Image (tube, rainbow, N blue to C red; front, side, top):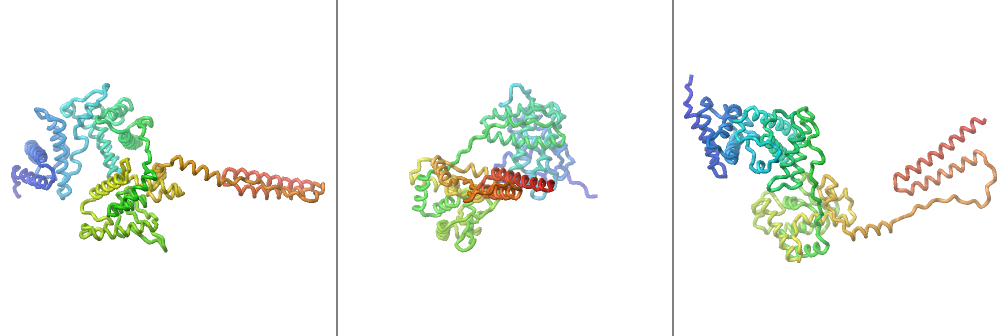
Length: 519
């Protein structure tokens, strides 16, 4: 049998692996080196049988090291322990991506100590937890670790239908909530013991007492995310239902449209036409099509598509909502795109631009956005616009203009690339002149309904009443009633007239039965 190398050689090999990874990082190395030195020293002392990274286990190796960080004398601060855990977790993830085989999830989110901001915002009626949780009661720590695994399993199930950013939001909110439970309710042994008062109400109070304070939209997002997780766990039987109610959500700030006034819009477009450079023409293209500024940056040189004779559309690539669309354009937009292509050929960055962007980049996406923003601010200042104008206001102005030109809301939602028409309605600015114009236009188009009259015969009808005469009268009444019904556009009124016509048909049917019985 081949003799095993000494433990010193094994840990020297591990140290070389970690050191190579640390040197590849673009961040300061000192904290990573200290964290690795502490971790390898702990393994060499307490677990000399660990021979490679594949032998590492969360329990007892990582759990024991985290316990040792809590039991330092003098004690380490929460900030220092958080740095060590962050550094080691980063290195383990990088090594796993390089092909080193070891068990995943060695360090979990609930292993990190609570930030100091949470502790200063503690409610007065909530019991505080001692600093050394491992030293106080290991079983309590294990119960909260079990909470994290339950939440993480549920988030992994949701991750199959959510975007990566949304999954990160779920992880962040779950970590905040579990850290709160671990700090202020360490005696909680099972999720089934969760109650609205004091557990959830205490967390809501802490969210309101953050420093710096959280906005209503941020707290609303935290509550919505946690409510989804708690609702799913309640359906699985882990905890009771109804822990977060509708009245717990803070009111969202009212959203006001930010369209430019017609005077500002006209002066700004004139100044952009006067400037006539690559950035100014890109801003004119954004104003003329209503696309997002990020979508304008990602346009390609072949963005203009022919849809038929004298019909053109701008192909907008995958944007904010991961959708692409074709925006109809006119001859003015075609001239803007042609001018951009001409200026693009003269731009130095177009020489090495292999991606074929309509706006060649000498740097990244964010640098191009900053350049467009600065160009817009400069043009607005030269045009005499007193208010600070943003790139997104061009999109709002386009939406409001389309509404005034008579474009319907469903069509406008397609032009703007919205999935929900309610978002389109938030973009629109209906001013008092718009209301006056719509009111008078509706009054001019009013067409009163004319009730048809029965023709009066020149010769009086014979004073006879038989079934044939009654049938003719009923048929004439039904015919005139149908003519009157077709003048209505209201479906409810048309339905009521249809019911009256059915009653006349029932009368005629009853008369036929009466004549049959008489015979």
